[in-house]
Length: 171
Image (cartoon, rainbow, N blue to C red):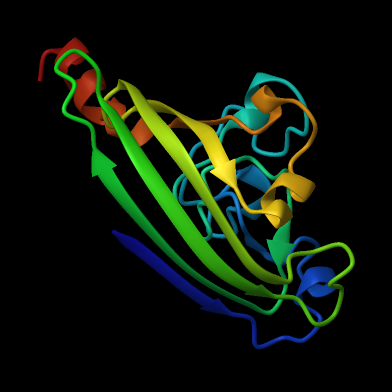
């Protein structure tokens, strides 16, 4: 179970911070204000690099391409690991409440929910999140085509790059 609560004190956060909204999909390169995550293409809008999303914030389990809440976001995600021996797959459901009083016409407003499957390709390093079904607001915000909603999470820190370098160096 994960929860997230965020509130922007600045009423004009979207413009003041250029993209100052809480991301509903999770944290893509454009929403990673604190530079906590590593991305192959931090500002990419298309292609492989644009599909990278780290867990956090709304984490609806579907790539909504820069849809965010400009004032408030409350989110809860519940997941369950499937008992399949050879595959590391879990199911998750997320519900969130978003508030964007400055610009509701282009950003999130109201209650959103979605279900998804998370497939761990390399545990703690590389996973794919596949949307299953969501509310009409989620479906309206998602770009057409199933694969546009798929999210990829590459956790380069999970590879422990410094431990890898030390082992190569023989220390």
